[in-house]
Image 1 (cartoon, rainbow, N blue to C red):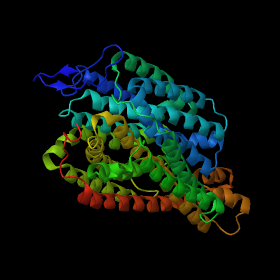
Image 2 (image 1 turned 90 degrees about the vertical axis):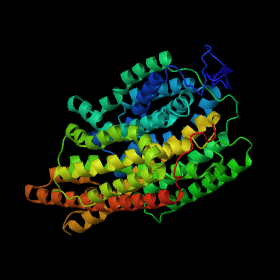
Image 3 (image 1 turned 60 degrees about the horizontal axis):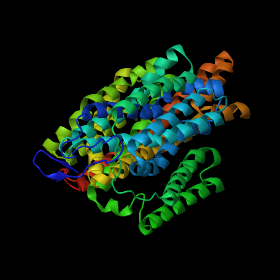
Image 4 (image 1 turned 30 degrees about the vertical axis):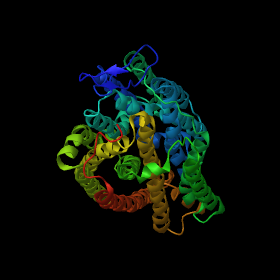
Length: 527
């Protein structure tokens, strides 16, 4: 126990290891340094979600993955990341958040090293999955550490800063990847993680204190397994749908397994004495509303980065670096606005800020839904500014709503739920919007190709814009230009449908937040 300045007795966050303890009502004396290190670790694992987007053309050329394999290369990381976050957060609570952070960084860095040597799509997918395992231990540890070292009154601003870097990491990924690809190949996009991990690991070991849940709880491996099966089967059905057919036995079985596993997860969590995620938490308005908003925001954001990188390179002809620089308006808005969103929420109310953010994002996605092969970059920048501004407004109050809905000794669980909603939303956004684009591209391309085109050529050209442009390069000159034009227009047809879906989703978020999000967050709740 420690004494606060007022003489009141407050519980110590951690009573073990190196005698590092502090009054949670006052905060850790080095909390700003801890915040900086936590955000560095966070940005690194979030960047890995989107950094691969601008490397897609070189990966397609080198490894020749199918459109389905390409989706798995991008989504395998997010799938394992999201599926294990709750278990990883609980492990961090029980055995120490710093230990979980260190272990996660080591696994992430090692898998990144092996990913750089992958010679087939399958090996790259496997390496990305192991990277996701490491990231699952890193992300919840960063937020739960921040929650434990900051006092209640400073916590909203700290969480807002964390949320801003989480969003900016997704936006900065394409730029950092583009810089690497300027002088290297896609392998270096992974290899660059190794020195970054070593630097971050050294900072964590020196600066980050030890903290854990003061009430050691049993782990919930059954709940963890059911949650992984639920998400994995769902994404499997979504990603394989265009290739195998939405009515195929494979896809229908995948969706059936997802539903059964989800029902089983809920039933088990309600029954077990120490649930990984108690479904009853969702009866708390701030918890459920915040979770729903975060899922939707990251669905739109990571789906957008995945599609925009391909639009800029395949359709507009940008280089990888130029494509990364072109996405900077979104990152800039997040870095500028997100840290200030806590103040906006305090002044105008969380509900109004989240609703406003969702409407800004809807406007940005609406602009994107009108893109054509000839759209000037100024409209791309405008859309990114609107989306970045909206996300930055809505993310932090929603994350704060989740984290502050539960007691402080459940910081790891609250953090993991917040992180899980982000990664689930991101994985679903990449899978669903990517699938929509692929399906529409195939349909539009089939209609555009003359009946005289050989079946072999037609099959490759309708698979995706990368293969279609590859066919065009090998085609006779008089047919090549026609094929390129058809591929560009087929891609933007898919682009239109995908972002109309995103626009509608953001409008639903605005309505839902207006009804269910608490007007003002009570920072003392549960603490």
